[in-house]
Length: 168
Image (spheres, rainbow, N blue to C red):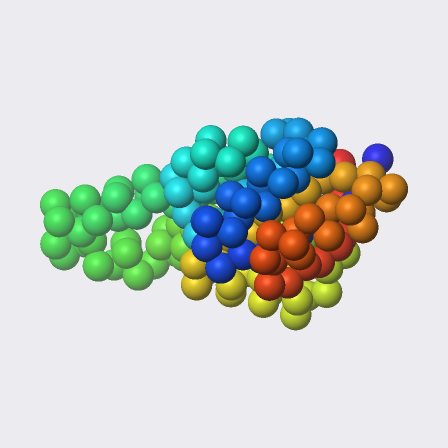
């Protein structure tokens, strides 16, 4: 089953917090509201603060983030313990595979938004905005509520609002 996903871009948490408060007042539940920021720890903290959920379900890559992070530590340890072998491992196929896992995280927002019907260029621009510190609020809603949700986001100061078709 699919439903609309309305995404608003905010320059910082103060605006996003106002938007979340107004969305909750308009009947949006915690489960319907996702927050996406440049890192998962920040995202999780913000989600608690605004009464939403971290955007990991939109990116679908939280496990890849953890694997990439742990693997980076492993590569650093190998390079320290085995100075002759470390640089070879770090520059070889293992590093490429780990880089791919970490890259999945970096492209997760863009890929997910493209999958929801947002044009590739637009999804890439949203990804870049997040990497530069923007906060995305994504609202899972019904067709009948799309315009209301867009209005709430606009009133709270969203600099850009996109609507996609989210497939479950």
